[in-house]
Image (cartoon, rainbow, N blue to C red; front, side, top):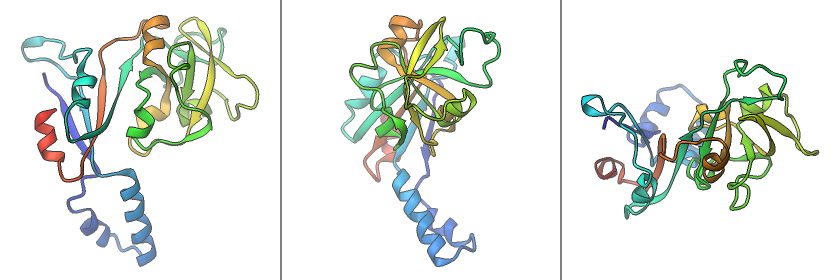
Length: 215
């Protein structure tokens, strides 16, 4: 399997690079604080094309296996969903406005240090029935600016309640354009793929290189 392994914001050389940007001391400090908050210990593992023409997909138990690695502090996954997210049933299927639907494990927000803008993240209940959390760009393009009243979007030929919207994802811009449903709900209601498409693993500081080999 060909996998893409990337340590986002690798700590080696970060301070040196900041030093040559010509920033004021206060700006340097603020930037380093932001980098520290995002974390320099995140691995991204993507399924790829298999050797000899195989599909290179992960086994369904891949996330559980990665979580068992001793140095992994937290891991999560996103899964492909063959559906479109639309404002309502009257919008043609092809007019997706660049948005997509993915499923996610509940730990995704914590793994990526994401933040809720309004509403809530997926929990034990909302992960199992048709409920969706929208990335920041998805919410904007679907015309959703508040959740003070029950709000719905159209996914896979059914209306799905929007339970939350997210702030911008500094570590995964693709999720800003995504409608995110729970992985159990994706399999039950939207023909979601049970195998992870991407796995994120946050590991102990200083173990990035060794955990690349393990993963």
